[in-house]
Length: 593
Ligand code: GLY
Image (cartoon, rainbow, N blue to C red; front, side, top):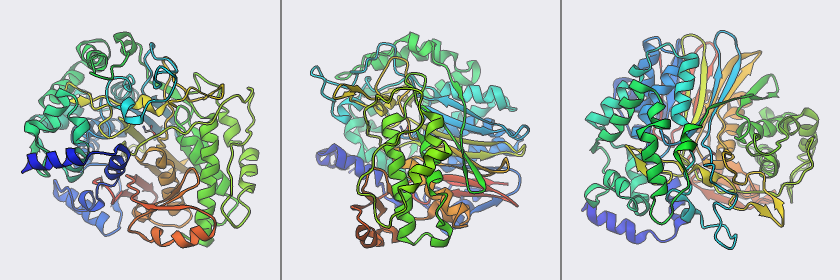
């Protein structure tokens, strides 16, 4: 029967984009409240989420995309570990139970607010392009951009993973727990097996054709040519072995040892679409500490990740443009509020397409893009009553000639977010990814390799003008990941982030506005329907009141698209108590004590 289902899926697999949209839409009812219950605490958290109520706690909290991962983090925090310790445990389990979204073969951005100093530090564990990569990596012999999935599946799209180095770097800076012990839960689950969740089973079914392209991947996800069933126990001894190596030796084997050799062999040997990564690329990989991007919003300060992520700049620009407008008076069901949010987002996306990329390789006007005067000028464009007929990049203050062409790279909504706070007052916000669902579909030693390089622009130039986010050796592709910490007078009030490709930015902005302006508790803010506008079309979340707003938004001049918008927001608010929210569209939970 399972075999028959697989054949049907393969037969139906005709249009890649339609299939990806279907993957995006893996039924909320199959992945939301009550879907995965592994303990009484998780049952309570799932029930709270289903009832639209936050989980409350006093000392610590974790919000993550899978209950087994959240439980691993909770154990560390309960035993006195820091948020950085808990992140290592959560990430190790996510790579097993939610392998389609993040893992050792991917990259991540991390924000840390230090409980002692109050300082915000950001770490960039983004993947890098191999040194042999050229701006034409994703073009054919005639310079024509490749089809998206022709680029994604195989070795060409694989960037040098940053997640293992980021885990170690965070632990070295802020950890208290024994490094090796942080992998215990993940090793046990990988060895003894874990129950396949509805979301994982659904994603495998939707991606069966691509997963079947490479032997190792096929044998793990489609053993005996069968789809995974919800609740079936899946073991991953190769992953257990990799984790044991990391636990005992740190990331060295990953970057300079046997694991590095296997990664390079898989990338270069990928049949039909090999990549150019070498062992030297892994050996020289480094996590980078970056300056946070912080923007004032009313009485708050919203801090995020700077380039190579566009997350902090776009979230900051959107909120900055909205500041003069009284969103609180309008409320969440008022189309005027969504016109403002939607057009502020379109303006920010226009700047993103032109200016945002890895600032180590191209000049990026980071200060200019969030300068008060500049944002106020962009905000004036929102003064009318109707949708802006056209949106173009602005002219931020910039000490370089403005010689970049616009770019609108494709990004799909995989990825995962972890929000954490510990008993020492530290706060951690980390968005982590292997890019597309199941990344490059190449699997090495129990984990999937990313396809992050397809976050670069496939076009290197437009009419002779270079694109800022073009491929270059050693460069990090532009991201939309927006791990965020919101503070008031230096005191954290909210930690938030989401998966969702370039819609991440809209999901994070919505959650922040819902909590700060519309005074919703963090769960209500996360659950609020999604309305996102990046390039003109207003995406409205199907099956919610957002879809009922279509007529009113059309009357304002928008084209609208009613579609699934499967955010995966994990958020915690801090005040008289810690309150955790987890996105009802996915399987995550918040746990705290
Ligand atoms: N690959 C998703 C992102 O970095 O935005």
